[in-house]
Length: 83
Figure 1 (cartoon, helix red, strand yellow):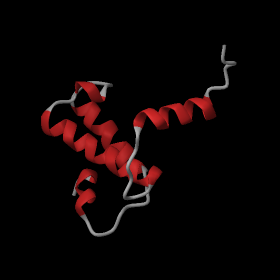
Figure 2: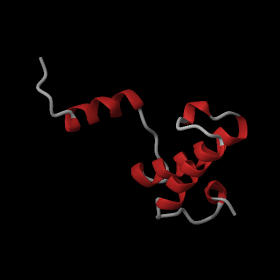
Figure 3: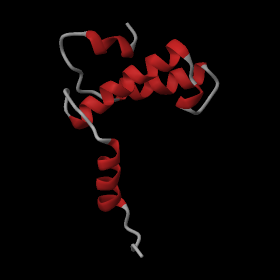
């Protein structure tokens, strides 16, 4: 079973490493370092792994407003002085 197939199992995984490694493996198999270069089913496999990682970070049933989250992360992590 590949890591991306775990998405459809009854128990939600808690270990992030298999999904990070699977994304790395998919990129290597497709000779790229960019998710944006993946196409078709290969991109869907990577997205399934990302979905699991997002669920681990935000909670299994997450809904993210990406602009709001970017602004929050900018406030929290951007240590540069704002002009």
